[in-house]
Image 1 (cartoon, rainbow, N blue to C red):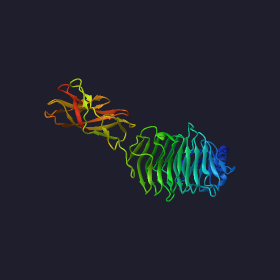
Image 2: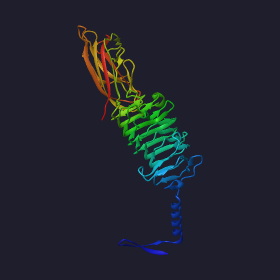
Image 3: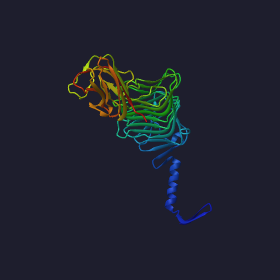
Image 4: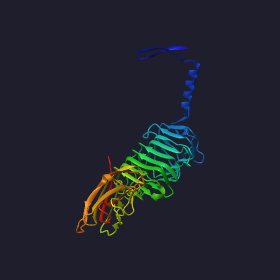
Length: 425
């Protein structure tokens, strides 16, 4: 049966066939929606749409999306997610999940498998414990959560052995007590305001010494409120958890409140990168070292050949991304960067000897940094400065070299100040 379709003032000549198959299909879809299930999607507008509880646990089907259209109280029961279970809501302001009477020690969302569990547009509210998720180090154990709010929950819970935990455009309010454990590639929060409950003496995120972050941990573009007596991020053992440089990343975060924002990690740790963040010291790749009243002479074996300045400098107070060992600063950052190098030298040598100083990278002196001076006839120390811009890769090192262009008389650098600072755009 063919019909001409009218829509408003427009008349469509193309026929639309409403045959028996189309009518039957529409009826099936209507019935499916009425029953809460269509094409792998379960529409949940009341508790009866969910699987029946067995000993309190409601086990959701694998590779199935549960679409919550309103607030649902699970009345003392909890959800068990299978591999590929998706939780989706109409909005984190309307799709609100809670469970009146649930034991505070029982997690509301439980999962133990190697697959993904995406979530979007939901709110978990008023729970004692929200999550107990074990990804079992599965190849696709991913938690990608967008607009997932956690509100007024005592303990967010434990997440372990997942590939990724990515939380974006969410709000975790008046809630704390998240513990990450096992091996996690990436754990990241972006545009997710987080407030720790006042008077709770709790910690927002705990990173125990049994946790390994293999790729990165990141907070970005978000406020974090930490009241008095509370902690924001607690790192038990930074070397055990972060094997790689610059993988604890905090960028564009504003910490507020009278609590402790970060413990167990500081700007000077190689693993830490903090930029444009209020409340904690931001990091920068920088190094300084110096020596005074040095009596060790630098031997000049061949006239005009540069030799590393002898002596034992002391590392400066505020070093980050560098280690200092004698007259050598080794870059330990994760990325190639440009640096300015500045060295100030006071030296003595034979009367009227022509002395020159250079910056060296990995033992090779840079001719463009050459600065000469003439040793004083009376033995008075002469001072000069040496400067340059260099590119350093992880593991590269800076040293200051000296030569005698007049002969082989030794040069004694009595005083040395070296500053290496990253060039920022």
